[in-house]
Amino acid sequence: MSRFLAAATDAAHFPAPSLPEVAFLGRSNVGKSSVINTLIGDKIARTSSTPGRTRSINFFEVRWPGKPRPEVIFADLPGYGYAKLSREISQEWPKFIEPYLNDRPTLALCMALVDVNVPPQDSDRQLLDFLNASGRDFLLIATKSDRLSNNQLRNALKGLEQAYPTAPVIPFSAKTGAGRDEVWNKIRQSAAKLPATEFQS
Ligand SMILES: Nc1nc2c(ncn2[C@@H]2O[C@H](COP(=O)(O)OP(=O)(O)OP(=O)(O)O)[C@@H](O)[C@H]2O)c(=O)[nH]1
Ligand SMILES: [Mg+2]
Image (tube, rainbow, N blue to C red; front, side):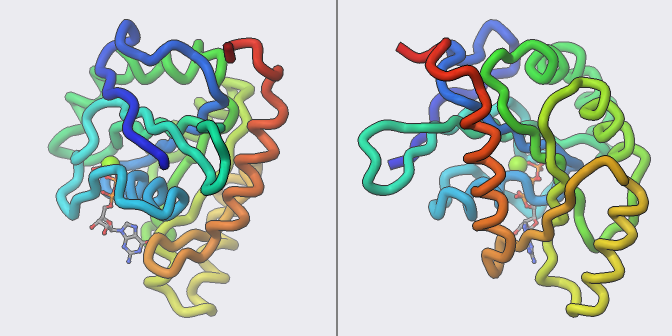
């Protein structure tokens, strides 16, 4: 089964790099922990209707059913951009989030989550700029797609593609599971690109 590995608020507490990692990034309340639970098929990451639930980088070891060993690690990151918390969180970025994104040798893919119901925000642009400059593989996940009609969703996705032309966009719903298979395919592709077993014993 998949399991919780560690919570880190400091680079010294990151687990030793081993398996390929996927990081989930985005504004508070966008649905990072929910996307993780939907991908894993288990309520392993804590979710909340109150923004700012996740305050540390939480690492989860993910094992596909039927496989003998875990094959990927998910990193659930604290959200940014929520007014009440933004000062605190922006203090946290240089302390452990930026070092994680810049230096983690096993980080294979970053998921930048945006709420498809909310117009593009400055804080999201900043994240996308950061990821563009980092050279990391990343995807834009348009969350909560179940809240829009097909027509509204098509328009919202067009808007996102215009706002962030460099990022592949995948619509996703933790409620219906829409986008789950496509995201898993991207995770497998990126994980396979990571230099094999350099960090695995
Ligand atoms: N309708 C709908 N609601 C969702 C979806 N994903 C998340 N939510 C709701 O959005 C709220 C926030 O979800 P979380 O997964 O806790 O968000 P988060 O990004 O981890 O939030 P922080 O940890 O606070 O940064 C919860 O009330 C979820 O139930 C979705 O796909 N559809
Ligand atoms: Mg969370």
